[in-house]
Length: 329
Ligand code: NAD
Ligand code: UD1
Picture 1: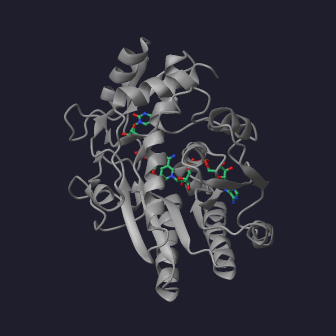
Picture 2: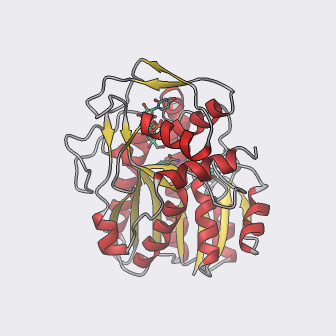
């Protein structure tokens, strides 16, 4: 298939691009490099032997996007492009709404105009808010507690409404849990601009001796009192998109959780990281982080039944690959 990958230079996008190329698809990337680097193309080429065509554009700019649709008969679009930092979204709500919503609308308008009928969207487990019970299934109630989460919910709604009005269209909403890890080559991984907020990039900084990790909260109602999340290897997540392409020629709206179905606490992550990589992760206990929930993990049965997706990489592999990439940086 010929697939447009917006945000394909970013963390999850680049790993998915590699998997798409490895499976014989032709990939076209649209990215404005606001949170990624052009050197990703060299790495993708080194790993796959193929250099995807790259357009450095703002996906929210419909005229720029249209150039791609004019030049290529695109079969499906995978829409990763977006701003994703929760804290930043609270202080810069307009930038988040504008970037995330407008890029989606511009993409939909181009797809409709040029007859491209399959849309795969990077949603997030954040749309479940603070779930009443676990594990989370796709029919749980949805809510948002910050502008970032609100954009995900809104885009899910826009895509669902668009599909209702365009019955031959296929929409797949992928709700990612906590992606971590890196490509096993060690050549590519998570390389955030600025100070990271997520646990594993901060574990890495602590292991490198750059800072001490703060463990946010030790009094949650979890087995060891620290927060529990469903961490998924970014290469498994990439495989989930290959699965989602099975819906490309089936009109409708499909929603899947992409996680492993297992929850790990902050202390379990630190321990696994230390053991598998033979490094020390210095940490202190700190106050709970505002807005955090105690525990969150997925029921991934629907993705397995409908698109044959099942994560295969364990927590040790996630920690090993994350460090393998990070220590080369
Ligand atoms: P990332 O920042 O590494 O990648 C996003 C890419 O999109 C970047 O390369 C950035 O330059 C590009 N981009 C942003 N706005 C753009 C625009 N208007 N036009 C063109 N390019 C644009 O982030 P990621 O972790 O790879 O996340 C990808 C998607 O998955 C995002 O939509 C994010 O919200 C979603 N998601 C991520 C996580 C996570 O933990 N990483 C969890 C759930 C959902
Ligand atoms: C965050 C985002 C969420 C996004 C998800 C995946 C918030 C409030 N939510 O969720 O929208 O979908 O990432 O990208 O930011 N922790 C520490 N110390 C740290 C950092 C984190 O103890 O320095 C703990 C957290 O309290 C949590 C766990 O580690 O229990 C995971 O945190 P993080 O990686 O930020 O992900 P989420 O909180 O799940």
